[in-house]
Image (cartoon, rainbow, N blue to C red; front, side):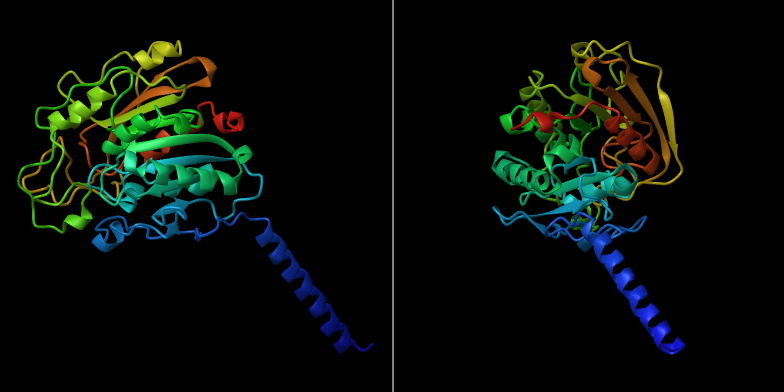
Length: 363
């Protein structure tokens, strides 16, 4: 065999080996049906001025029973059998799933912390029991494809009315038996709520900015008043019977002058130690989103323009059964400024430090 034939044969063998390696690598990665994955998350907003049409997009993944859509973010290099944390993230009243993805941008950390995040949408922009079947179907579909044995923890996350909805869902059999933790983003605090600022709530007047870019209702539509919010929270005042970790996050300007309670009945439930002195988290980078329709006049308790800032992290240590109970207060923030990157990451770390494993115990 002459040298040219030898080189051709070597080239063919090398190409075949490379093709086989690429195929094997692709086969070793988990591809969730109907959920395309890319290094930059689908419909990711720029650092500021996110286009309104992007914010209102309902997501590319179809929930096959209701035919409603949602977002599903996960590591593109996810391997079969790899352990992940699964999170169902619920938007607030009048909001959208893609606004929620950027208000609490878990998707920016999906690769680093091996997160699978489902972010659904309510067609009425307000969650109710009518949505429960849709939410359960999403959870069941994700668990079915990832494998319950590969989900080390399942968390509910909810902003505002999405937090109140999380509280309600945790009182239902389906979620009570599956959820390992709840992160409430200004959506009510288990163990004693702080008082509301006297000016809390969206301003009466609104700017002419496109309402589609905002989390709150468009001008002229029904927006929940502080008394209505208080009534909804009162209906859920008794703690749920389920066992789970709990993290509460809020803006300092949302609360009255008394601020955050120093104790927590939820921490007492798990015999946690006294609350530690706060750890400070600082951000120079602003969050992605805010309520653009409620800036004229501005209301600090409701939320101003995105900006960097500081947060205080309060942890109740040594909780039994590996539970985590913590409070996070973002200083100089209201209800609707999107979370900054460092405080987002601090919340993720708290979530991952908690006990999981309920799905392994659920038939």
